[in-house]
Length: 608
Image (cartoon, rainbow, N blue to C red; front, side, top):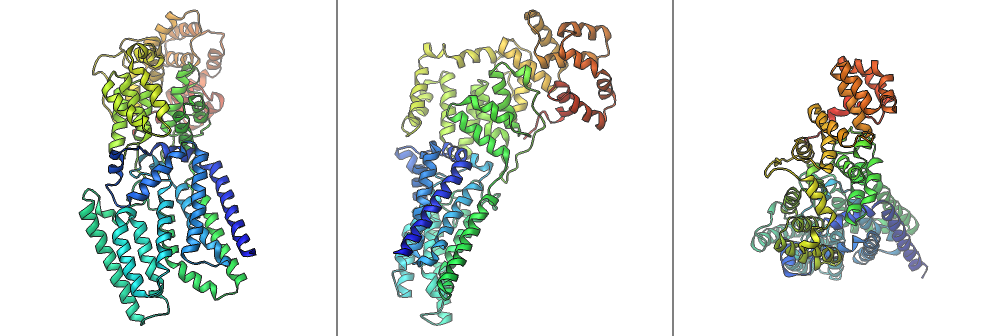
């Protein structure tokens, strides 16, 4: 009774610690993993998933993944299934209570695998990433436990081969894992049969397993890439570039294969010593989890931003972005979008660093691939937004996020039939039906033309047909678009001024700056516009022009006075810049357009 209580307490402790860790560190990860997945209750979706081996684990995993729409609910389900997996491992390998910590290792390694994901989460081609490993491993443990009931080697081998042939199409690598481990222990350890004969059995069985896999993949799944036959059913982002991410999966397979041997060796020791050793093994696995985690602050911020946009909490995005010390270009784009929404773009956009970091990922993915569809949508460029959402869907798989973006784009682009297709798909989901119902009302043109997003589109996208280039680089295309002077509305003029300053395009800047001054002569120019006007006027070495600009921006104002105090420094930086002067500028004038233009503008556009 005491041993049962000890095992129960260890399971409860594992569940509480795992839940607390994931609740603190992984809520955004769980939401985004869910948003990049899709589960629809129809035959078309089932047929799509069942086109590859291991579809059962993926299908059930996808069903469970949708509950991570509420991250704490998803984490609760995740931890509950991990705890159940612990019990199944203990039962399948008949672990005594003093060795029960060993049963924790596979569950801990699943957590390690999930926490090791990087930007590849935005380009996964597999359904049910969060839960399919747990579902697959649970099925493996059930099969191993049943095979362990058979005592004769030949009977166990025969049943393993039959079970593998039947279950590989639906379980993939999880069926292979169980079929290999089930008969392996009695064949490789001391016991029944001659030494060489047991190994001959093992070689024949492995050969038969491989043959069955190859035949079934080629006959039942002709569209599946047979290079990944042995990995079929595992969640993946990019098999060829993410080997480090896969380390926990490899360890799970090796650990389960050798677990009967480990059990046999520890049983030869005293129960106390065996318990200590098994506890150390489990503790080592727990310690490695935060070490293996993908610790990239930009990745964590991007997950939080995508989570905020996904649940309609756009007001959180700016705070998240400005807290990032050295953001990737995606976060800079999002930051500027939110400043623009608040009318603060020309007053605050250069208060934050423009020195950007690159995406540190084993996956070769562009910023545009990850955020392009949403960025274009925020600027109401429906066609470009739709193009990137479709491209991502074709390269990877359909997802809730891409379906939402595509539905939104075609609704505003007056394509009701296509909009109905996407909205109907979302209406058949569990958690996105309300969003789809609210969006569907915009199919009424009278409602659409009163919508604030539609009105914004008419103010910002006033360009001749075909004037926008089709480019792979989201940020470059936006800058180029806004610095081309077509018809200008108030909203577009704000973006054009910002783009001209970012690109250092003085000709466009002067046209818009003077037009803005004439239109709003009773208001002071935005802070960064004042800074740019003084710098560009001084750069021309025309004293009359410089004095006129001082009057325009307000000679007694704080911006003009700050420039005049550092006039000699600007003169040196514009003629013969050196690192000492650039450092001085960053110290004296942080958060100004001057610091951006003279120090940071070399990183203004990244072609990624």
